[in-house]
Length: 347
Ligand code: ATP
Image (cartoon, rainbow, N blue to C red; front, top):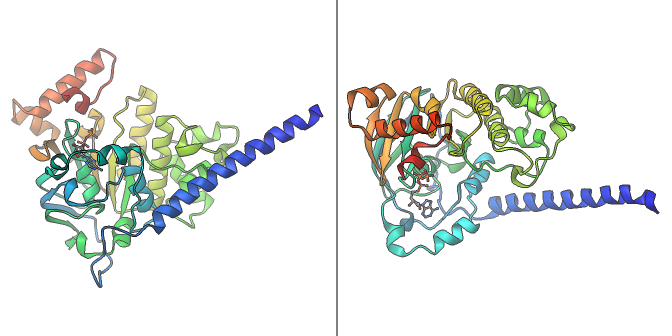
């Protein structure tokens, strides 16, 4: 009888893993099946991407004006699948749902304008709650604007199909959706039909191939529910590999604010460099190394852009810039050996 324990235990484990995979798949199908609350206009055209120029013209938005309270991870699932629908419903939503009406109708993004030429990088920094992540979400049209326009290569994103819009944008967010599947599956999800060699090349570029090969099951390793069996740095690099495979012309990155150890930070930086090459990048940045190389930096406060320029501009040209204070604070934290973020420092 004792000899049966091992195979029975294994069967039980297999059953639990299979059940979790089915739940994850069901969640995804729920996302895809739910009717989109942002709708395509009649006879919407497909977005024709030439280089990936992004323009925000006097963009304003408040959450109260539009109902879908969509957490990033869920929206991203829809985006990764190139689907117009966005799902809703988790603890985050419940707490937002409890907000009073005034708080929800206050503008979260107010008259924001900028232009990111094709292939260039824009970094957005600012205190927590200043509207940085929301600005990124507006680019993939999770919500309709209350004012202004967003253009990609000259086309108003509210006039093109959501499917074509989301095909053009790769997202790496703080809470990227990983399925309780193998590492291979999670990377290959970026482009259905990618060959094993392409999946491996993406993993190499994202600096995660060697980490994967060091695991006993290699690419067959199951990542656990929402990637729980991976470290934060590994999850980010799997998300980056997926995005590299997607080959989208535009990339949005909501950089994790959690501190990474130096070796992991270097790997993530190298992975991001590989990802950013030849793409238009919009980054909510928390790390100095990401911001200094940006072609333009926006500093947001209470939904508005209060400063803009390159790193050198903001440090030198504007002696009293909020940006300067942020980085002085972050550098001081770093020197003390306790990495922090500009956002946290500003609280
Ligand atoms: P952080 O650096 O902490 O991530 P942020 O600058 O990215 O902050 P946002 O996440 O864009 O800020 O949030 C801006 C404001 O909008 C905050 O007051 C926030 O509470 C509110 N908000 C964010 N997401 C939602 C949502 N889904 N529904 C309602 N309000 C939201």
